Each structure stands twice: as structure tokens, then as C-alpha cells.
Image 1: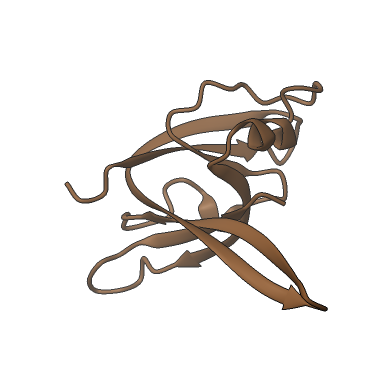
Image 2: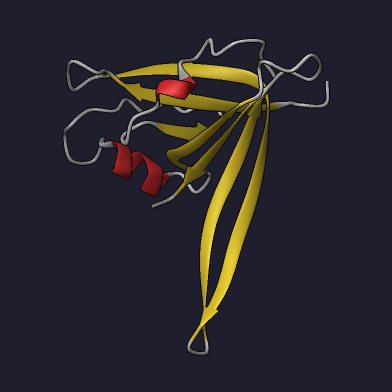
Length: 122
């Protein structure tokens, strides 16, 4: 299998302050850094793209919220509103993680159906 990465998706409930956790195997995680120069200073913005090789949006990724995150690997964290276990705390504690910032749904293609998700550390 070419895509051997594992990620953990945390999605916030639309009705209460709880997060569901889903571990997904067989994805492709790719780290990226955008570098820009402004007034002689170089700024770096790290982000990652995760490709899910799926036929439909079985994980509800198209309906992402501002507190939904993805962590590289099988993460044991439990997210809540308590300081130390908030989404921002989990992202801070895990270098390969971030808030979902965009989703590209390619499940309508005839071949190589997939969804690409971009996460940013903030």
C-alpha cells in the first residue's frame, strides 16, 4: 500500500461542546511551508495537506467547523473546553496537526476519487 499514513480527525458537535474522534488509516500526509518576504523579513507559514482516498464524504469533511482539527497518527487526546485539552492545546502539543482550513472534494471524478484537506497551525 502506498498510502500508509494515519490521522485522527476531531470534529466538534454542532449542538454542544463535544468532539467526535475518528482514526483513519491509508491516507497521504504532506507537509508544506509557504515563505514570503516582506520588508526584508522572511515569514514562514507551515501547513499540511491530507489526501483521503474515498468515494464519498464518509467523514463529514465538507461540513468542517472552525474548531475541527486533524492530528497525524493515532492521537490519544480527548478534546474538551477545559484548559489543556482544548483544540488549540492539542494542536500546540502535536507538531504535525492543525485546524481544517479547506476541503477539496474530488469524489465526483471517474478515477482516483479523493478528498484533499488542508490544515494550518493557526
